[in-house]
Length: 560
Image (cartoon, rainbow, N blue to C red; front, side, top):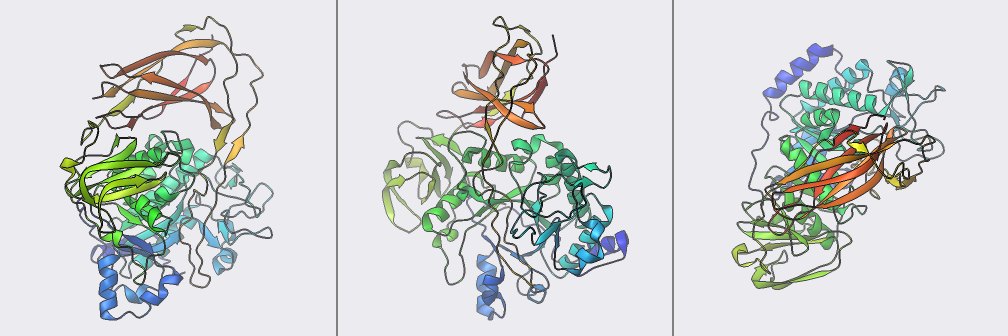
């Protein structure tokens, strides 16, 4: 590691120097139909970057919109490729590095004083990376000074791995453990972890005010709170790009509108856009169907400043789909013929979500697919997409609208204790709920250390949480749940109702309501008193209307 030891003054000085380098300008947005390809230039890619000829350099500059790279290896190459993001991990202290012995106080520990790890690659009771104490100002200052110094060597920005807004700290068996908070000498809560990480990322942004900053995140953190969480919103505001690892290729994504659905992932991307930030659909597939699926999902939400990637892409193995440009978007994505669709000035994209039946669409006129063939029918299995060039004005089918009206779902705060439920206390209402992420989801970017370069893939598995029935019988009240889908006149809304139990949210029930001609929906539901609930409404869309989702509403019903 390369250290600057002059404190905040050094950070300020280097930040001034960066303002005079190539780091000061973030690329202006292109049309939404433009493909911005990014790649992790790990050790497997070294043969293309070690000593490229001028023509090979030109190819990389033209095809790699950005690359994640490692210092010091890439320091001498920024002269011909200035669009690199230099890599670092937000809280990794590598077990074999001098820093681990120089500053043992910077390593998180459990209540017995045992060192804790980032839960990846563990074997034999230890893991490659200790979990650093992000609550420690001295560690944060050291880490930021070191990264700022490396970024000043000609890099476009920085790629920060493991910006986890869920506390990911474990023992040597990869079992999650609450570390001792050095500020309170008590186990560190998830909420405290989020506050420390958000503060850490704000400090990094202050030190690199003009650099491009990428956060590799857990998009479903804090039980899918998204931008409804102030700390997550603060963390997102400190970045330029939010990396969505595996993108649409995550095998744990589902169809429909549930928490783990493709629609939820796309909705999260749109929440990021609403904060003025961009996303990277960091696809994990290398086969053509998987590449096309992730590209189509990217084009469903692209704002012209986003980026996309796919596996196995090199100058020797370059997929032609990355060269497509559909031009300007005619509007946002919308539901159409049981698919997701978005129209552009030069074509359209279609996506068949995971778990759906194979669908074959007959086009009224030929369009050009990614292979350059003229097609008049498109067959899409589940979890696949089509990117088509041509005149979309002739493409609408079965009376569907070529563009759908944008909607906004608003959930009103339920009234507290409307009146006692006539039926008396009912069942507890709790159900088993998957805790964690979709299969294979989670923050695990291309991880490399110049002395031990590796590509890591972290697997997170579903763990069904068991929740006991409350011992005390609580009163039930009829509670009014209502809201509106702005600009819509029909369709259905799913109200997710979660209750708080043992420091986590547990799914209680889902209520489906019809939207009336004024866009309104309402239902009286039975909820228990003295229980904290959160509610969210998801509008599934209808012909001519786009889907949308409300923010969470938090409610605690008073006792009788």
